[in-house]
Amino acid sequence: MASTSVNYTPGSKNPNKSKSQIDLLSSEMIDYVHTNPLYVQCLLHIKAYRDYHKEEREEFKERIEVLDEKYNRYNKIINYTQLTIIFFSAISAFIQAGNSVFHLPEKTIQFIGLCISSYSALTLSVFKYFKLDDQKENMNNVRQQCAEFMAELGAREDRLNTLCTEEIWAGPPNAPVPPALDAWENERDEMYNSLKPLIQKKQNLINNFDFIMDSRESKDLIMIARDKRLEYKKKKLALEDLFLDYAEERQEQLYRKHRIFGRENEKLSEMEMGEIDKKKCEENKTINSLIKNNNMDLYNQSFHLRKDLTIPEEKKDNIELVPPLSLESPGSTDGDE
Image: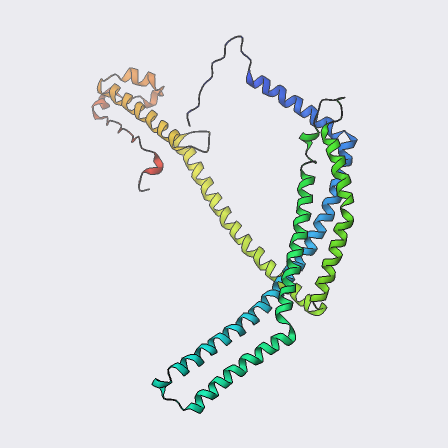
């Protein structure tokens, strides 16, 4: 990307100087914020709330994983049995409708229909006895409530994040109290007052969870959920390794561009590459023009060649012209290397 030069008049302000002054004043205000005891007290309260939110999120995240595991088990059992009922019912209807082709005895058809209807009634009775549908629905409801509880904790965390930044508390030394202090005091009171209903909601969720889950089964499901979580983290780590490999290849490509084009900037856009090729092409044209006119002295002076690199008189006729470079972007060529 071509850089644009800015011309300054004697009476104009230097933006670099203004920027340095802004940085200096900003650092002074930030240092003053660090020495403000009200800001330090705010950070301590926010840290306490964050630690509480983190523990609650970890606990309910594990409960949600356990509920998901058990819900998936119930869902698979229910779906499998219902699909088998549908499948056998379809076979029974197919046999009865195509009996004119199969020519099966009437007693056989009745026996097949009796077996399928007995199987359907048996499975439905077992489901009703164990209340699998009700348990599945209860698990889904408890899971939704746990997810809403975690979302509420996340909302509280977002409200804290807007008040703990140094820039919001920044101000000149010995200045009036910043508005962030009033906002934090109101938020702090609201946070503290909402702790009691939050704890009550947590107790209700734990009671519902313990009512649904058996303690022994819950421990087994916790181990399964943790094992799946570990497997997920391993896959995520492998994917991050692929991204790191790509970053290394990209960095090598940038170093190669730097080595070829002799630029300090590692990232060269297509426009910059085109400008570089155009400049080299103009240099080659100038070299060819000087060689054609047999003006070796001007050639040596223009390009600051060393004495040992100047072209002898007897070899002037054997000089090959430098081929002009292509003005296309290097990235769009199909050169073989």
